[in-house]
Length: 84
Image 1: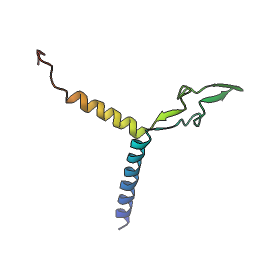
Image 2: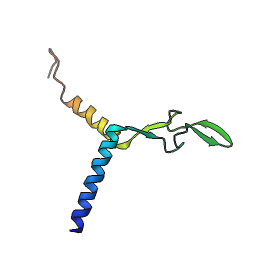
Image 3: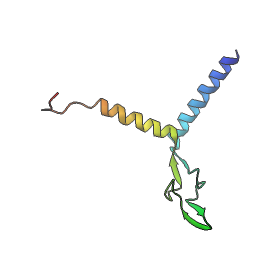
């Protein structure tokens, strides 16, 4: 019974994260906390991770985009006149 509760909890968490990645694919940058600037040696500089965009693509959305690109590349029709 304990394992069933854990399995249902993981399925619920994964479903919630999937909905979150669909609804809000971008999250605040973790390095600059969504400010876009980091302090280095007393000076404010552009965040090296998000390049002052203040947002980053979520890991789940990045995985979905990679899967979609791979799927589309593998299912494209062969152009006419192409050598097989």
